[in-house]
Image: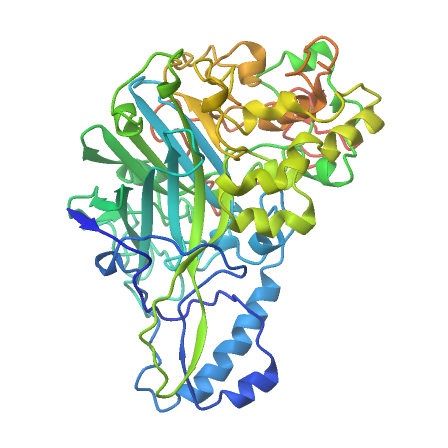
Length: 565
């Protein structure tokens, strides 16, 4: 089904607890006679955004305030609760890279992946991960997708830094067992174990989410689900509640026809990093990290330092589409053709929050505003200055020229030179332009006029064949594996080590500036998916564990014990 769209039609939604601006107590007192209409929104304003219409409205089981004689009291209480929830959401993590996303974890893009599918070289797989570091045991509601967030995957195919194709995802939440105290229940109280996402075996799946998939091209929205109901895979509560979680996971894979597949749900977070060392002012475990030994650097199968993300889950949306749907002319091109190269990124949006008096005009449209985005990994996290992180999060890649000083003279490179005693290239760092422009080696067919503006897009040459499973290298392009980051990104790519070496100058001169910088975390020891959806099932809430200094989890160390220093 196709629908022509304009700018953000109004979607009135009940409140879901996402704070978008500070409201003082005195303002609460002044607005006691207000009708509160929440149209969830972002903290920092961005551009108005086009979105498919009311046919895709997200819904919730929360009661609406309309017609409620207690609404003035409810309104005041709701505002107070918003403020408390905003404070509760503050959390330090490798994923919440900007102040705005630290306050809004549901809209935080943790990682973005785009690569040519391993078993379908005529297709591209894109993965949008949001809301990271999810503790598997953290019930009773766990971590559903936010139904008031618009999740998008974007593709630029004409090298101007502006999206030409957008895939939109909206989620709907239903509470099917309102009298039950937890989101998932099985094998007790007359509830059978949860063995299905729908129908028999799904009775205990009280908190259940479904979602829509829409493609927007040239202002025309096409529903890719053809009216089907798609269910998101829930968190893994444990073996009593969900005795065959692997089967539930498989049920979440949907074939939409025309070579399109989709999956959404909670999964093992594939990202890996020694988070504590990185953010303790680059305090690497120097017996391992900093400058890797040749033996550690060559090892793609073991960890030598603790992976701080091990054992945590993340919410993931995975979409596989034919390459011919993404290129400007609808064709597949060889690697040397500039038309083979696309730029990609993931983003999240919210609608604004407004407080209106009784009788006030409520016909004004509520525009969607960008909250967060990611193209290349670690750009906003490790390159953009804190004072500019929010602006970067809500702006468009085509406007990234305003951040050029961060790209062309990165502070982190200077810190590496000081801490590790290694040489780095002088500014301006034009060797980093392949990360932010359409140039060789990712786009060997691009001339100077094809470079486009400085824009943080994950560029993918769809003409480069996928590296066979078993031959892939964690250092990707740097290790001769041309299908790996920064030429696209796969879940197995060690973006921490690759990005660190790029900042240190390996793209400028691999001999002079080729120091093997690394944190000693070389792999997600839980493994990776080798076919669609390329992510692994979520960790069990009952039986999961994490990895830390002095604990088991570093298979490259004696006894598997991770180092402390």
